[in-house]
Amino acid sequence: MSSPGQPHVVVVGGGIAGLAAAFFLRGASCRVTVLEGSPRLGGKLGASEVAGVQVDEGAEALFARRPEGTALAAAAGFADQLVAPGTTAARIWSRGRMCPLPRHQVLGVPADLGELAGTGLVSSDGMARARQDLRLPATGRDGDVPVAAFVAARFGQEVVDRLVDPLLAGVYAGRSEELSFEATLPALAAEARKHASLAEAAGALLPEPGGPGRAAPPPVFTTLADGLGTLPAAVAAASGATVRTAAMVRGLARAAAGWRLTVGSAHAEEHLAADAVILAVPASPAARLLAGVPGASAAAAALRDIRYASMAIVTLAYPAAAFPVPLEGSGYLVPAADGHPVKAVTFSTVKWPHLRDAAAGLVIVRCSLGRVGEEALLQSDDAELARVAAADFATATGAHGAPVAVRVTRWGGGLPQYTVGHLDRVAQIRSAVAAQPGLAVCGAAYDGIGIPACVATAQAAAAQIAAQLRDDPQ
Image (cartoon, rainbow, N blue to C red; front, side, top):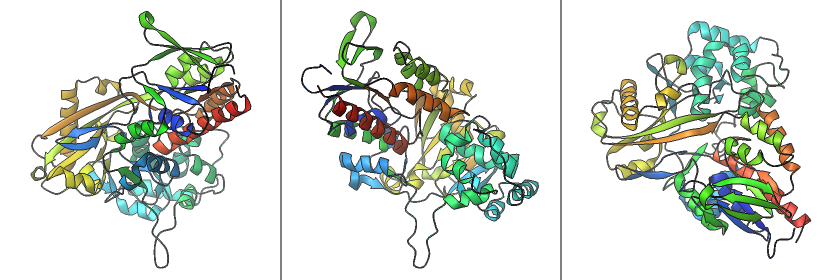
């Protein structure tokens, strides 16, 4: 490469994946520029005040049993800010009653059918069908299949509707009849090849319970005391990269040595030269940038096939007196089959003790709305969306009176859908990108939408680019 001085790497996208990629390039003897098209960093992470309390607007919990997220937080200076939830006991609001979410399950796939029966979530006929899983021969799987099809073949449709679908909607805002078993539940899909019973496969993935002589398993989730929304700025600062917001990348092209990026509007565009580029943007903008790169058309086509779901989070603050019975547990999920607009609710000041202490007698909850196919609901204005959320929440919990504070946060096209064939699409993208020296991709579109998964893709992309820079020194 012929750029003067240190090699220049441009990261397109200032969400947590792009900022993590910049962070992991610190020791690569290169200078790094992060270009974010919007006015703020962080992508789907952000925090702001509701009734004077700092509450996350996007993701509010970090999966703690994958190390990538907590390690990045610690490296960014937040090791002493990681806090554990006070409770993780969630429920499902199904057929007008609250049922405990079984603890022994993998994204809704039950490992203990006796426990499931005790929750009252599934009817007696549904439980009789679910128990057939223990006796049925192995269900064949020739390639990828929808989650619903495989799980229903083992347990019946009622377990899908009442347990699996609500959890998948909570994570992906997707529907189990469309989502890929191999991509959304990769560990379970692999384990299911070793067991005829899917319940046994799920059980094999669960940690050993605590007990005499055994340490209790670590918490599943953690967060930051001031909100996960504070993480992006800290990672950006720790990366040492040059970070620009309101810098929309509109074009990517091969140059004589490296890459040429077109930034800004058509009437005030600028061009940047880079020795390497990491695309850390959602699938659609990544496809647009790759469409004009010779040899990358297959990647662009596969990226265009990745659909996204939109959602909104309505955060409500109530006086404690609004609840005839105090809220218990971390929140609840809602089956799509019941037709409610709210798909999940987090009892933020119950789940997180530090928020309870900061709220000074207020109860703060986050209502999640929007599944694939429910775009019309999200077209309501903020006031109507807040009214719908508060009314649905009141029906579920008995809350009375209006909230004292409301915040509506919209995530348009925020969640990639790992539909059947997703792994093949990702392999096609990575194969085409790998054939382009000095180019890598990372983010939620590939291997998981949680923060640790996004960070892992960023680390891999940074390692790929660092290796290429070492192999092709200036």
